[in-house]
Length: 250
Image (cartoon, rainbow, N blue to C red; front, side):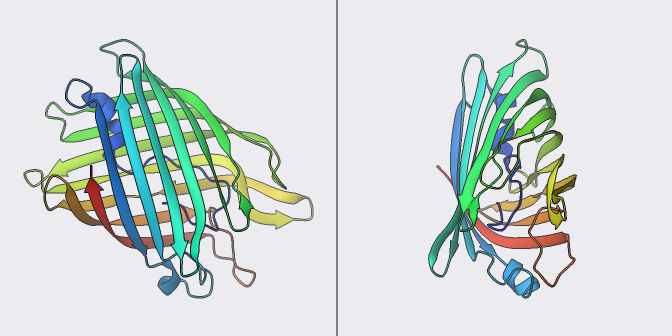
């Protein structure tokens, strides 16, 4: 889930659907809808007073003979209506039927009340794996990242390292999943020369209690550094924004 005041949008999908490519013989299609109530405004009343109250997320995954497609969209909602939208579309091509390696291509983009995010194209190798019973899944990706020019944003080439994990336990009642992104790019800070470059961290671990096959309740923790725009009176760069969430698997 993205903050509407974020800088340089870039993140990977947050749940284990992104790793369903590892389960091609078992599942070829999956989708879900999530509703997140965000506590960031309460925790950072001065820095994030206008942060969204709700984020609505739709995710879908489809596998085929070449690999898989993944798509999601986030919509942030405040008292006065929708304030931001963010999407990612990714495609993976398997490099051999038994190989853990895949070629990953991705587009990230969106906009909010303040303008367009720094849209980006990413490409690189992915290494995917799983336990024998698929209760543990993981993916590691090293990608070239091209931030696109738009508005006052300049184009910038960089590198992104992404890790994605999924863990099911407690006889299938619990799921711990998430992703972590580390990339080089513009940071939400300016000097006399304009935009600054630096290292950005963004991760969103999730914990879910699966009430049944279609309904889960849980929480997501958005942890970031050099990602959210700083308030004019703040030098803070590190944030932890938790949510309370419902997930409906369709």
